[in-house]
Image (cartoon, rainbow, N blue to C red; front, side, top):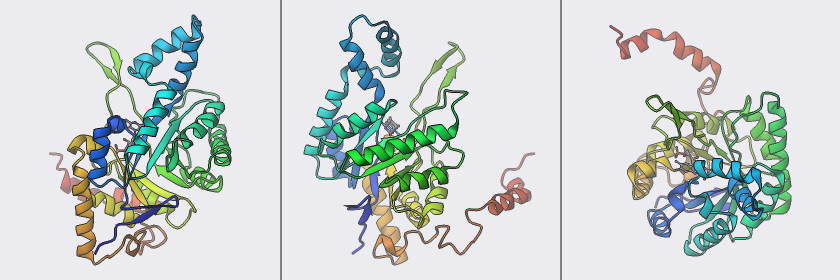
Length: 337
Ligand SMILES: Cc1cc2nc3c(=O)[nH]c(=O)nc-3n(C[C@H](O)[C@H](O)[C@H](O)COP(=O)(O)O)c2cc1C
């Protein structure tokens, strides 16, 4: 029997595939289908600062700031008026009650007080863990990267003191040295790192000369950045690692485990191939393990990590230089004339 069980921030999961935070979790029937299809756990969509603030502003009638921010937030988040923090928490609690698999909450705040208060509020819903979604796009020309990082590490430390459930940190790849920040998050007590979030980027409609914000699903091949970091991190952290972004197939999952990840999170593949595709991913992973003679995941996890790889340059600059030096093989693949 092939054993797909894995541990993720101290919790035993039936297999390594977690459905990441998204709008897939809005409907209980979809959630039951996700569970049925074999997801090991789900991350409920994030509670955002905008939801928290909008509810606060709504209480202060006629406030000018509310008028401005409300219009902006409502256009970015069309459903936000009906999804304040109370409703979010209520729905999350119902989801925890309805599912047998672990449910993780997710939080994305701006102000320290919101991070702390709502980390506690979400942890009181019965969730198995909490994911801190540090989704931040640079806006300041003066604030240093070091200050942004310090603030985020401090939030992790403070939340760890307030809640008893395990805490994961979901990061974007846009730090000058993600390895250093990840290590500091690990030392601050993060129980898992989710690498990496995919930031929504704007597009411009040239006919209407207007910005537009399309759903930004990943593409096959987008998994390589997370693969590199899973390989670099394996054996270097106390925290678990969940690889995220661009994981579409059972083979992609096997790649992440070989690099050293503990779990993966998937979203785009379910939007593109439907929820039922999850069971295919699990079947393909199982089949691959059987073909290779692996009885359990620890038989091969991290086999191709930086620490264990036989190729000392696999994750290094030398590999990059080597690829660029082989210009003739690129010309053979992509004939220019
Ligand atoms: C429609 C949609 C909604 C999302 N909502 C959230 C969210 O609420 N919180 C969060 O941390 N990530 C959110 N994400 C990001 C995903 O959890 C995931 O990190 C990203 O899509 C990359 O994984 P993928 O390549 O499997 O899609 C969302 C993604 C999509 C496509």
